Length: 148
Image (tube, rainbow, N blue to C red; front, side, top):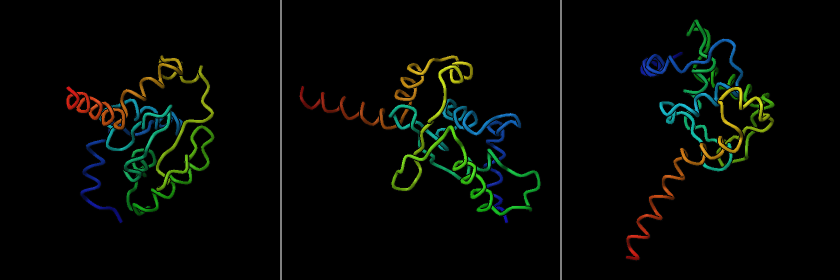
């Protein structure tokens, strides 16, 4: 059934759970905008593409059943993967491990209403907070130091 250490992790992240009225895309996007969730899901610095780092955590925050004894951990993950496949606003970008996704059919007005930013501001934000951008910036700074 479920792992006790996993349940303790879930309780510590309980405030990140999906509310009952939240769409899948808005739930994922809310987590992407929350620095506390960067160990679960993060932007990759290429438009609004994002990487799911911990699909089990993401699935449980989205779909955690009230009665934990009904589903095994893997069943909850499988339910979430099926929801991702059915979503019209999120698509898989064919990464090696199928862990990179993109927001596809979101309209500017939906994103503006949800975040208060237009699409260009969102893409700039996604680029700035992605771990790849930080690695690239660290590399270019050290390269400059070597040339001096």
